[in-house]
Length: 532
Image (cartoon, rainbow, N blue to C red; front, side, top):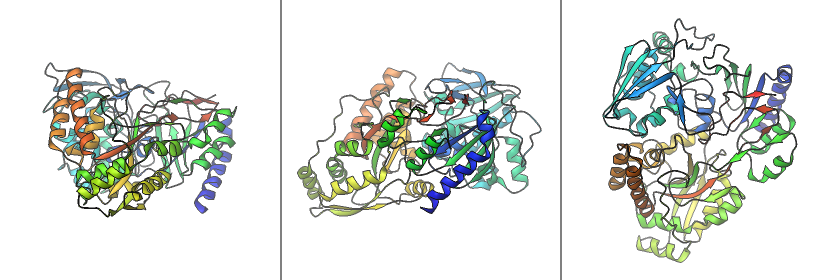
């Protein structure tokens, strides 16, 4: 309760302090759902981290059109691709300035050196900067980018050539993702010289529309609009404030009072009232997401497929969708949403069957069941509006087949860190598509390269992995689709995780907000956003 009251007081203070600016339409307060783990997007994989860093402070060579899965030029005005599909030449935008802050004053504009540094960080473990920070870059490694990029060359100050070891059909989409944000090589050099390399994660410098000012964990992030931003029309705010508010009910209260203009992740139970409020608007769209239960196959008895099949068929998905999603969720069967090309429409769920589940456990040598930990996320995500309730319902379902589940939770950053280390038995987690390519679901979440990253179940199956690696290297979408469909069959047979639901995305905001677009990737960006 103390945290909740503190949050309400903070929002009130912010609203009073910025009242004049709000009237002038220059300050926007966004009620976000959690604290970022840091501000170096290459280190992280969650939307909470990306919203606070990549989508405000930074740019990429290639970017997604706001509200779309289509790419557009970013810091590269254009690019060429070689006939063999393995070499990309990027022609960089001139006159782009890095942020000027109390802790860094750039002496030059963005150029090829910054691109070289950015990709060296992602691919070279022996880079002195990487050794100084001891950071890891899970997205780059999960996608195999660290091993596939053969060379990054500076042709001239505004031309860079990236050579791949093998074709990656989604390479441009991949580098449009948040983790590939371009960093300042000059700033990195300054940090190295002063022995403060890790400061890149706490005092960020980018080229993006907003300049980082201050961060108080579990409280507030402050940004100033970048008056020198290179893409005209994208900065319509003097100030942007993230009011970190973990409780969705409190976020809604703040939105109603005008203490924030946009809020993240509403409770399904609040949607009707929001839609009826004349001061608010609540646009929505089908979610490009998936909520699921991951099984750690390195922990016994979850290494046995019969055990995972039993747990899977004991879960009453329909009841969960009714209670947790309350009309805003659709039953999930596959490891990707049905709007993703290559979705295998022939796959079916095993029927809910307690007796068959018990028989499978007996076959696995566990006629009396077993004990297990079930981790539940501490925050709302687009793919799961209430992990605590979902965990309690699954706990009850598993009890019917003799499996005793102890529900465990941690602070969000710790939750992800411990899960990557393999501490969980089973966990609730999910995914929002990042780039519109099937490999983002099958490779990033289930590939062998991702077992120390987003493949939380540590499932590495050779036949499955061979299919997705081959599909990644083919330029023809029809040929790739056939391989991905086969891979989904293996997934459904081995059950490394249980898909539960796809959630509809609702974005509540006040009527005065102008230009905000719902991202298919569940990111919250403020390019071109203003207040009427």
